[in-house]
Length: 228
Image (tube, rainbow, N blue to C red):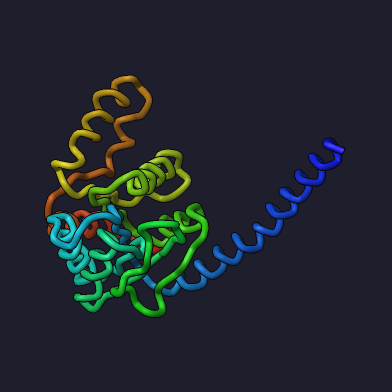
């Protein structure tokens, strides 16, 4: 009896996993159809917990506004904190403001600065991450937590392994990021676990002018097109 129950449970799990593929496929199809129409964009990442009176929230608004003024759309994770600041800046500039929302038990709710036709909802982090990478011409990474680091290192890994074309990765906040970058250079690099060229496209800046200058300089003479 125990053996039969065990096998029945296993078969049910396998069936559920198979049906989940249709939901995953649906998220990809919906994402591809909507995102393919938005034009060149830059993704802004950062903590969902950053409050409106925080210096990085205010800086993210300025950065997003400058990015939109330069002709790029802005993509965020669609939630509060830095994500809200990014969408707010794009909205203030009259630019494209995209939100890739994720269903979470806490923290996440879509912010009011996303364009009505450019708010997408995801259940799966990995589908959402594909949209960020595929349709971004650059990553602007503000101070954040584990999710922010996940997006950062995902992009670095894909570029390092030539799975995607290179694009600028800009860390905003010298005070916040210097310790991590020092550890990467002094420990990972010195141990031979990465190559110097792996870090070539990572820049640390403190102003919106520097962000836009790096993106514009990188794409001067290049075609702007989705990754993959």
